[in-house]
Length: 147
Image 1: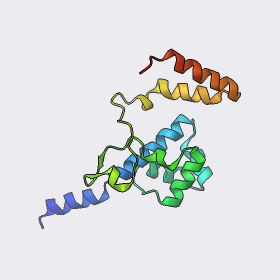
Image 2: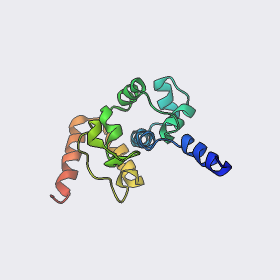
Image 3: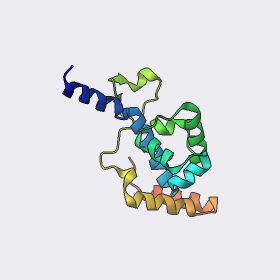
Image 4: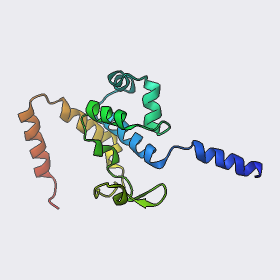
């Protein structure tokens, strides 16, 4: 094997799996939406913030028990981490072949990562009275065009 082939192979082996990177990005998205720091998430899980960083970048693979803990701490179903995953990931296998439910199409304009979206969600969750929060939710839905 030529030196270039060895280098290319080594680089491919150290790249995060596309699935690990996707799951990590969903962890980062939810943590950010909650206004939680990597340090606070790490404390809740018994990890360092560096370990959380590695999970979020997809460098470290998240095991089943850790994914369960993340879902509990971030208050989302486990399926949240796989939402918006492209139909084909990595080796070209369909999500359906792995038992993933039909998901919504990815957001072309990256709506969930906009600062305005994050600020809106954070403000919404700062409303402590559930009935007021529900009324705000209903108001926003009533202002949006119907599909």
